[in-house]
Length: 302
Length: 147
Image (cartoon, rainbow over all chains, first blue to last red; front, top):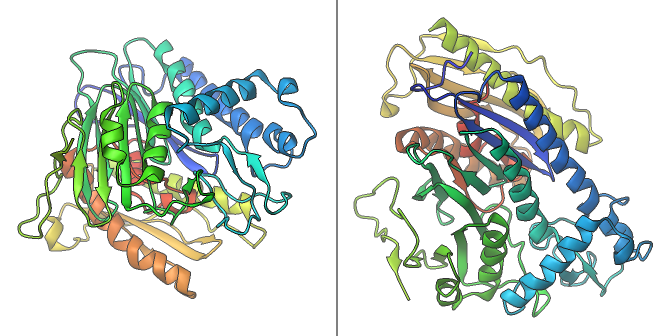
């Protein structure tokens, strides 16, 4: 069946479309392929992600978030998960000096270009208003929680990636780390670095894939960042994602701020193409060396 | 070799199905999907620069109607590895499509090959949308492990 499998380690991938993006799950270990209990767990995991999407989606008029924004539902009447996320968003705003916020201009706002912090436009909001849109945190939070279910499969490695934000885990100390390739935002035909990740999250924020989509909550306008991309690694995908988003909005002093975060490492690509990594950023090296095009190695810059 | 061809055939069909899934649920336009039959032109050699030799097989997915037009995927496999991946058909009838395609096609070719050379397991980048997925490096990595 798996003519692709190299070596003795069985590996299997699943991909589903959830939250408007591809969600890839890779499982590595003896039961990765063809085990009915594993299949059930994976099915339940994707179902859980869909349920979370139904709760939080700003694309769905009947989601609790949209009902909350229309004033049809009070926060204390929402699902406990919505309240948990609201609390986490408040904490994220505190941790990022306000550079992450779930209080965003409602779609239709004159400065709104349609998407904010990874979310898209939704109908039914009036211009000039701010609304509660936790999408910038929900994805990482949901993926991290869903991935944790996979630890129930003893001795197996996994990663769950939603549109390029990854929660990874390696069970056995002798198993190889997951090799995470970081896309070069300046030239996306290249992978600019690879990072070995055993346990934790990797998130990248930037403007490369979809045009400007990160708001600066302080101005309510798209972040006019002098950064092209920020990749953050850390023990938690949710926080890595929050920090990457906030760092992108923060702009030029993002690297110093990132370097001060506990158990967090980062790779920042500035608009001029320069790459800077915090001292803890492991394994940062060009995947493919070029001869004389001035590519710089990521350098410690603190 | 036979086993490999079958595995890849299902992979291509899987990708095609995946791609069509979103378009068929999110657009009102006709998205009648082409049959997912996969043609294999065994023994065709890819371009020399990627080191494809006579043992390679090129697999072509069927045409799929998407929101933006017809898309068709092609993968070249040698000894169980994707040595080249690309699209043989992409829409080009409006400026946005052209912009997407100008960037996307070379990405798929070089990244799929580079990924395997670098043994990359997963890719982090600015959010990949469903529409971009089929052209992404992650899709090639996934394809190698979808059973």
